[in-house]
Length: 127
Image 1: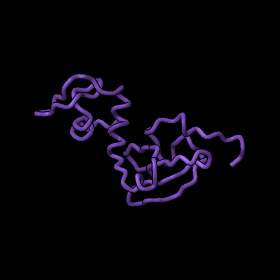
Image 2: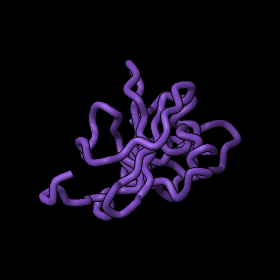
Image 3: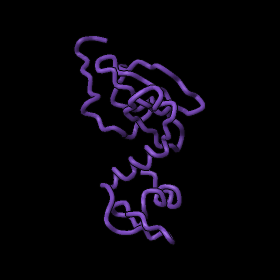
């Protein structure tokens, strides 16, 4: 890696849309593990040692890149939760309104009538 390449890990969000073919890292990360059954790789920044989960590109699927605290955390990572967080983040957070789904008392995602879980799983709102 040449000395012109700067680590951007600290300025990047904890979770953002991306995959192995489309991310802000270029060739700067070192791949530590490949998990084909999970369609993901574990990568590390050679400068700051930050671990990154990066989804492998799949058709019709939103990939995510996420900061990971440890290899053990990566083994147990549930990317569905990351994708729900990302969808909420993209909508600007949570409101004080109650979800319109029958018998749900969770708070809504901004701009939606549903909580994060019902928006994602039942209404198929992925972004």
